[in-house]
Image (cartoon, rainbow, N blue to C red):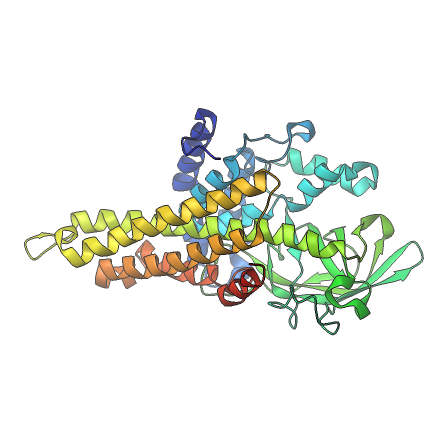
Length: 400
């Protein structure tokens, strides 16, 4: 079982990432949050400077193997890093979370021999120090979202489809506005219908460049929270995709592939929620010990102390559950119910904690000049990201 005393190498990495998150990520996240128009935020100098600093530090390749130029972080560094980044800002932490998807798949599958694009992309990604290369996972659609795990209904299928055409496929359709990093990514992990009569089991998986002729992006989503994370629709207007870009044709194995991705994804969403909750708690605690009312620091009032202790308790419990899910994944024993339990617990706790810390700060808590207000908005999205907590819970319950 995992030792709660992390190796010094991981602790040292935690300290470096925490320093970066506080001094670089958080100011950038706060600045991007205040830009009203997302189309101005994501190409801004603030975004470019942050990505340059993050990539220069190697945060885009920290978990990729040294054999291809990654940093090859030690075991269990991933969840520690994700929490620290999210404590600086949940939006940019989420951006960095999806950034290495395609590069990681190319490296793990040794796909450089399959097509020149894969070889060139992986090399460019590993050498990138400006944040010019990143990934997105395009699966959800306007009419297909929470029912992605409904494999029983043959009429439940993705509407974006791939049709065989000579030496490749023609892809047509579009993905919803909730594709994280969909507005900026230059490489896409794409799920589409290949055998529609088989429902979701007729889904195929492609790894494609983000600039194929016929591809276009919608406007970035203008949303309540996590505003530093770009999300956008991706349109496919009869896009020709060479056969070499087909990663997995439609087969019953798709269910297992999707489950593996979603298990890791839910654990990561939970870790983002944990970081946001921890940040809110730390700010609420500091405020409560310095703010005086009734002749003493408000921390000495029982109702305030109770809110802070409950926040502390939830954070510690969420971290333990998330570490268990991460440990199971690292051992090749990934558990979807455990990941979904960890994610829903952490994101619900994050919503409660950010709400309570706004309450602890009173009138100061609702001010746009106060960080707690932003964290409260961010928390709401984490109960919805990668599926609503209600549907995620039902999906997990069906596997008990």
